[in-house]
Each structure stands twice: as structure tokens, then as C-alpha cells.
Image 1 (cartoon, rainbow, N blue to C red):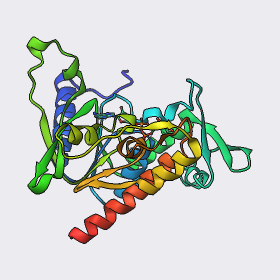
Image 2 (spheres, rainbow, N blue to C red):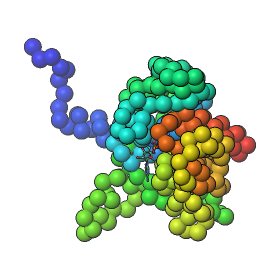
Image 3 (cartoon, rainbow, N blue to C red):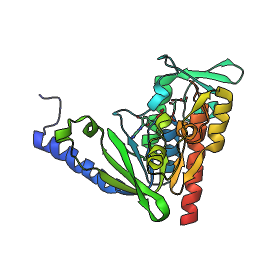
Length: 262
Ligand code: 48F
């Protein structure tokens, strides 16, 4: 007696193709595209989707989580400073208080719970997909992104001529970390200036990343370390509280902007 239900190779192929195609049909035109699936992008996407906003997350790697799996120096204990532990509570992530106001959790635990909550909230995820360019409308308003499969950029030149596709959206969030890939693309076009992070200063950096989180250009919000790169703020170092708070603030600003357009 076989253990599994009977099915055929062609049924499995059709199941994959038709479900994925349905998903792509949904994401072609959406409210918010979040580029980058690190801690700041995950929180922003989670908060928006939880409130019924249509969100697509574009992540160039196969896995989500960005730098949140590791706490620094390839050691997977992750730190957050108060008040960000309240967000760990909210996502059901256990931690210990190392000293007053400084909390330590496990990278794999924190990261996997945040990813699960984001997917459960209804965010559509395109992994192994890289941001390539922006869609620009009148007066250079960002109106979506141009994306391609990540492996395309590794193909040899003679076979790399694969056109990208476009995802239209009302708002794009740059959550690509130190790369600040979208700000950098606008800087290449002379629309914005990309300053790059300054030297390390954890206390100053954490506060200023949250304070400066917001629209950097019409249609384009920055969260997480992209904020630091966009405004030349100090480097953050291996602590994550401001990544979580920045993602949350980004989502609130995106919601306000969507409401004002409605
Ligand atoms: O780097 P990342 O974790 O960004 P973050 O949310 O958090 C930063 C911290 O992890 C840490 C820190 C603070 O403690 O300094 O570094 O700001 O996640 C960025 C994600 O964006 C993806 C990348 O693979 C990663 O998962 N990404 C970067 N460029 C692209 C991209 C791109 N061009 N297209 C798609 N995804």
C-alpha cells in the first residue's frame, strides 16, 4: 500500500506553473513594493499587509532575512536595545536581558518568526528576484520597479540578454540595506544624491535611522540601513532595534500617504 496519494509528473508541473502564474498576475500592479527582505523590510511589509494593504516583497536571495540571521562577526546572538524588545514580544520572540535596556535573542529564532509573521500577514514574496531599475512617471515620481531573476546577472554575456519585467506600485520602499539599491539607481540618473554611511557610532546611528526614515523622493520611502546610506548617517554596527522601529515607521508613513491619495 503506497503512503502518498497518486499523482503524475505533469500534474505536479501544472500545479507549480498555474499557482505561480496566478501569483504573478496579482503582483503586477500593487499598493506597495518592498525591495529587500531584511529586518526593516520584513517589518514594513508585515505591518502594511496586516492592515489589508497589497504588498509585494522583492528579494534577490533565495532566503529572506538579510543580516538578521547573524548578530555580528558570524555569531548568531542578536542584540536590540530598549524599547525595541517590545517588538520582539509582539512577534513572540524570546530573549534575555543582558544588562539594563540591552536584550539578546537568537538570530535564527528571531529571523524565522519575523519571516513567518510577514508571510502569514499576506505579503507576496518574489525571492531570487533582483531590483534592476525604477519605473519613473511625470516629474520623476517612482511608480514601481523593474526586476529580473537574480541568476540572469550571473549568466555569461552571450546568453544574458533576458529582458526584465515591471511591477507597478503606488509606493516603493528601499529596504536593501547598505546597498540602498534604489536610491543608488536614482543617484546614477542624477535624480538624487547617494551619500553612503559614515563611520560607526551605534547610539547616534540607531536614533537617526529612525528619525530620518521616510520619503526620500516622490513615491520612494527608505527604511533600515538604506536610510543611513541615503543620508550619510553613521554606521550602525551589529544591533537591530532601529531596523525594527524603522520598518514600522516606514509602514505608518506609507499608510498615511496611501490614505491621502485615496
Ligand atoms: O542588509 P539587510 O538586513 O537590511 P536592513 O533591513 O538591516 C540591516 C541589518 O541587517 C544590518 C545592520 C544593522 O544592524 O547593519 O546590516 O537595513 O537586508 C537587505 C536585503 O535586501 C536584499 C538583500 O539580499 C537583503 O536580503 N537586496 C539588496 N539589494 C537588492 C536586494 C536588490 N538589488 N534586489 C533585491 N534585493
